[in-house]
Image (cartoon, rainbow, N blue to C red; front, top):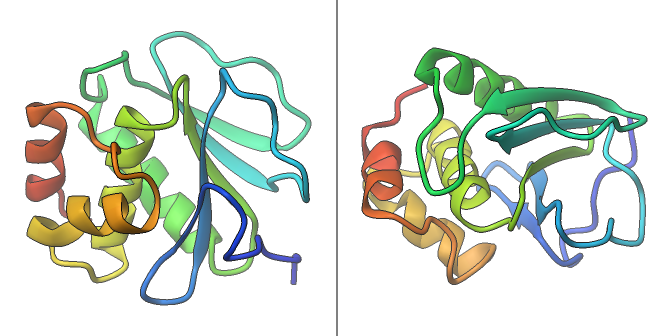
Length: 143
């Protein structure tokens, strides 16, 4: 089993199941500590190359994913892999798209959809999920 993130590390969200997922902004330096083993990058353009396995979901800034099916599949995969791997979810700033994705993953983990944004704001970043349509996306998200 891969060494997991430390629950106290900045940007690491502990889900009710105990799974840990790191959220971050790609504009910031890579945090100290272990590297991810898998990442989902939420960007409008192709992300930079990384030495770990990653997946790109086309998701423009302040918007919603271009393909809801692709996003749902990527987030389901991230949630599942977080049980045994170091999973990272990231966009440029680490708040809007990343927060939205983390809230959707929280729904997969059993957090009621109407409480997922508050859960992520309380446990990850108080400014996560930036737009009304991102909040609505989380409320309507189903795994």
